[in-house]
Length: 435
Image (tube, rainbow, N blue to C red; front, side, top):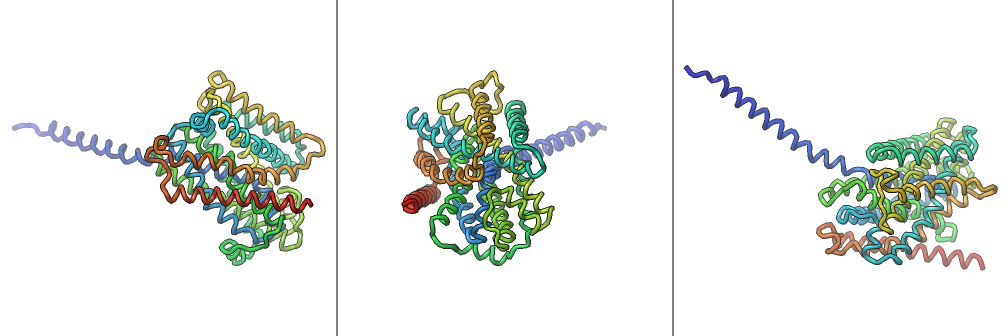
């Protein structure tokens, strides 16, 4: 009688092998999806940096809930512009600076990068100002906080691998978001008023109002953010196959960014504005003012949110500057390379961080003016960057099947046009006000 055991064993092994292969195949899409996450979320989280939090705090204290509709409009616009930027990175595998150089030549690349670096300098100084202001609440002098922050960021970006850097960025972004969500609920706002002001525009078009609108837009949709998402996607080696995951990543980043922005405006509107404290000089002042109105815990949470947001911005804005310059000149760049492999990249990164750390120590420097106006400056310069992005977004030869669809292309130009008109209105209003 034949022994059937070997045949049964082979059949069992074959079934187990098929099950194992199926399990691996079923996990691959999920693993690929998770691997593609990061650029949109980090870019979104970093938009709520020190300058952004200062801007939202000032807006909430001065205008109450009136500008919440701008936060909602910025969320939609950010999702549109970030998807266009992400598509460029996915399709070409190149960062913003390199692509501008390839498509339009070195002179125009220098022009575009120069504009962005001007805005980035103000943003990086604002990050150090935010770190100093947050730690000053705990008695740490600004020279010490600036030195420690600069060394920590340079060490993280130059020594940690890409995965660890991304994990730190995401963890800090989530922590910041939770801090401001808690502070908003502790302030006990009028949620009905907040909702109605989000859906229906309020306020009058005065010069101060336009500055506040431009600052809110400029801190949400930034020149560096457009470059960062493209360069980061390229550095992460994402490709056309990652489009679906990238769109979800961008959408989540835009949503969370503006939810946090709304929480900051609401917290300050429900406490400072509601009690007549409409004049504040910084986000740290907003944190201190929350103490008597919403409790010491609310003050500490707000201050910790300012600190973590500033650290995240300090990690991403100089990184974007280093990406852009090295890409524009064709030099080696990327967090997966060492100092020896990409000396210019890391030298520029250290320069941008170190210069800003020293700049913020200038005696008598009006830090709140630097932080607030850096966001307005971002908004004014943003149209120049968006024009380059939109011109490339429908190039079939460049992007192939990832080129922007007609609705996305039209929406992108509408956003660019509206921001350009807003920038022009702001400049005209300031000229007329000075006469």
